[in-house]
Image (cartoon, rainbow, N blue to C red; front, side, top):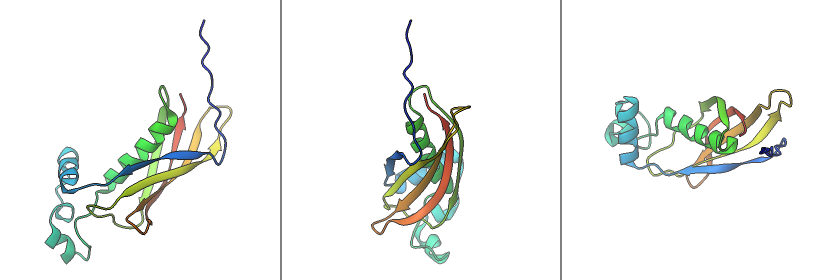
Length: 138
């Protein structure tokens, strides 16, 4: 008989960071998969006419990074139950995106772990997104 050893999860525990530096090709491919053809993601001149520094990362790509951080925390056999986020500032092509977080709470009865997540971008580390995820660790 094999016994699965439960991983100890505590409030305040760090979530390992997830990083991505999207380039124009990444945005093109992600836009194709998600059927997002808005010009602010591809056309520098159009993005600038809209008051942006250049083409911007899609909101859904930020969500994918949050999901990846949650899934990596949940581990093999774990589950991501919820992911939610709010965009706070635009991220542009070439900005280094880094998602970090901490454990907000652990529900002893269900095993659910709530994570507070934040994504920072660029050299200055401006907050692009804040959110949370609920996982069941594997």
